[in-house]
Image (cartoon, rainbow, N blue to C red; front, side, top):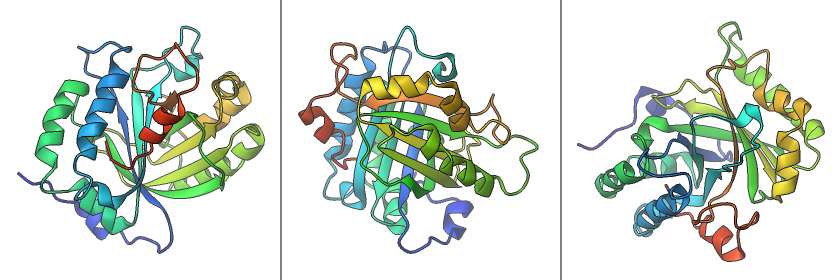
Length: 262
């Protein structure tokens, strides 16, 4: 049966000129190891790319961010999640058209069972982007999925954006910092904002992930629920087990930005 936009998406009024995106936070199929997951996920994206003339025409960019499986991963970034996809859309109408596309969804959803621990749609949220540092994204990213604390008050979005603006000082090595307001939440999460902090190298991202000041700024302690929020240390999916090279090749980076979705 074809999925249709819920009431939140139907009633949302987009602001002309702003960037709208789909973001999901994923767990891998338990049958896949952490080493196997990047290639399996890339093959899923290639399947989505096969719908380029119908589904892909709605996308501006696709960034598949896979969790770095490091033995010394800082405690703040240890969790059950394995990656996040960030899909830039041409418009809000394109976002709705892609998310509820009538022809490609059945095949993609069937393949999701092979790759993921659940239905991607349950994990997907629509967001409105505000650029804090408006540079180019690098190969590595620190992501924060922020759920409001119970006593955060009614203006969580405004307070969260103000705190995100302070990250420019806390992360001077970041090439791009983006704050995203969740305008249509995922059914599985109660995230209200997502922050992206991009770096051009593994070393720069690792130093940032080990910086208590930046980790606190990323987690927005004081207004975000620590138990319900999630931080992720990830890199652009190279489509192969991580560890042999800290920096994906040019070919790998281009493939991860092909706008194919998923």
